[in-house]
Length: 449
Ligand code: PHE
Image 1: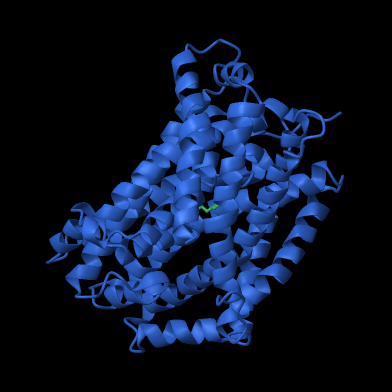
Image 2: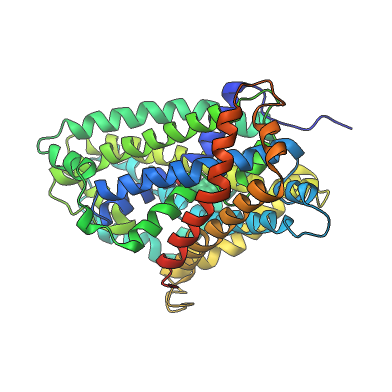
């Protein structure tokens, strides 16, 4: 048997996991959701959710994957007591990864279109067209938006085909440092604008009167989405972890670094938004309409806009690699396909599933299900329903079914690491705190009680 591919170094493991966490969630969702929900108060709830919900789930999912060393479905199947259907966690994970990638690749397509546009702009000087009209024109053009989505899928697919160590690890190792440098450049630029302090006040001084329960649901959903939990990704990545990796320390590092990236993105965006008198609560179009307007009003705006969208594209790429790896790992290991065939098939299926999301702003704009178009349906179903449900199932499985002894043994690398107390705290959260919190927020946020 050939050796199973996996991550090769400690730093490779950390960067790959961080590469999955960091993405459009930090640069697109986090700023627009924070902007819509009153700034700092949303930020506080979000940070609480990442600690109490995101972190324990991430640890549990990685440990489960590392224990079995298989894709998400097989991992849960092989740890389940006979006859119990816990493999469904893996099934729901593969489905979620698929649905997320279907709309994520659409947004990533816009980002790549904007990179192209901004580079042209950097040479030709500021555009005269209104950025709202430019964005509306892109999403309303079925051919252009589909072609950009396919470009993104093929680009990510070709990296995945190269395998875990060469493809995923090799790419994120180069991409993450560039991303950090670009973010810092953008943050410094934004803060040096006159009138920038209002943006920082918005981001860092809370106003709890603006915090609704829907906002709390959003914050929790964002914590899931951000840390890529509740959907088999961390289990799949965990299966490529090394046996001597310190899982709690790695996850904590990833969580903190991910939060730093979100904050840097907020610092790069809000001061500039306020400095140019724009509204922070524009919603999902903040990145594509408000931000270009900000850049237009700035000296050397074209260059900064190009840098900004390149950094967003890099972030989205690392996340998409992890999303695509989940179904590909299943296709190769469980269905026995070659890596090339499994990837090609998944990309084709994604192009088909992604098309309704991409076309929901153009030819399918009249089609709605539960009042949502396909794009919003995929987004809402995954972030607010499938990921939280997957999360509760992982908590129950890790805390009650798999067993405290096995959990402790895995977390401490068979007793090598002196982390008994840490293991017990995570077990406590997984058994009693995290699932209860998720259920309350989810049911209340969905209006069920
Ligand atoms: N965490 C990624 C982001 O914030 C998105 C993602 C979600 C990636 C779910 C994998 C799984 O953009």
